[in-house]
Amino acid sequence: MAVKSCVAMLIPLALLLLAGSSSVVAQLELDYYSKTCPNVEAIVREEMQKIISAAPSLAGPLLRLHFHDCFVRGCDASVLLNSTEGNLAERDAKPNKSLRGFGSVDRVKAKLEAACPNTVSCADVLTLMARDAVVLAKGPFWPVALGRRDGKVSSATEAADQLPPAFGDIPLLTKIFASKGLDLKDLVVLSGAHTLGTAHCPSFANRLYNFSSAYGADPSLDSEYADRLRIRCKRVDDKAMLSEMDPGSYKTFDTGYYRNVAKRRGLFQSDAALLTDASTREYVQRIATGKFDDVFFKDFSESMIKMGNVGVLTGVDGEIRKKCYIVN
Ligand code: HEM
Picture 1: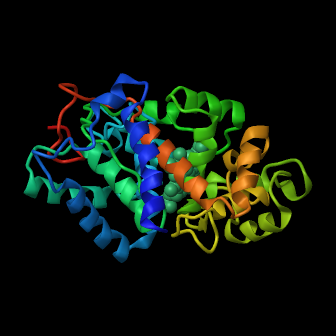
Picture 2: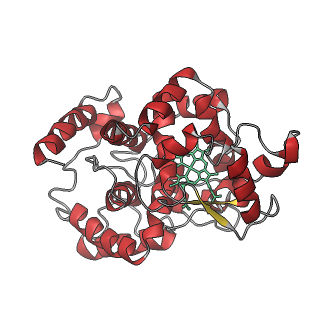
């Protein structure tokens, strides 16, 4: 893409960052670490290049970690904390059992501690890693405002209650997203993250076996695709098998997800649900044409910026954790 059009894309994003209506947005700054850790972005990028070139399939998990962080207590790295005696932490909640990438976060944080001790929060590290994961998977770049601080509380119960379930329909998903300040457009756009990564059978195999139609399949799932998935998932609780969510290009950030959903081949009920609302269906069908990849990339960047601002701690709230898995 020409440098000029790249710049043209970044200007509205920068404006979105600066002119956000929430006062929280204003407290995060693009050059937050310019004096205290000027190379923060370069350090994260360099480590991420090593991580993703060694294990390209980690791009999805690292993006998902950031999403699961932001949806519970805001983007405060609470998802990274280990359980302690007497407290079951978010990462041990059922929907988080399939999260991966914690070791990579620790690795990047260690590099930053060596360069700028006690300075860069784990919440900012995770936000930058998610952005770089998308870029390295050939997706869009967006500017990340920084200055998030790390929370000291992490609760498995909150994670189980607040994360959107794979069986979610539009009313439920809309409600959950709205509770984080995100709208229906953010829902259909951010769901496009399912162009990356894999899923375990228990996340979708109820759609193959537990419905009352022929073979027990969910009628909103393409029947040929259901047959194929049944070969991989012999039982609903088959935990060993993984399925690519965007078969054939699950390590590449592209618009394949929308083509799958448009063909009734979205893996989760939450993906299929996007065809049941007129405005989300229209978006899916438009992006599925393959003629509007740039629109999706711009929309995804904007929604990721919004998600990265959810419930952030700033100023004197929280702390800068030394190690991401334990409070100071
Ligand atoms: C709309 C509501 C959403 C629901 C119900 C949902 C649900 C799920 C489920 C059930 C999995 C599979 C877990 C497994 O079986 O291993 C998954 C994977 C994934 N999700 Fe979502 N998700 C949603 C939104 C998002 C958002 C907003 C993002 C990021 C912006 C995201 C990024 C991902 C990624 C990248 C993976 C693949 C992870 C891997 O490869 O291990 N999801 N999601």
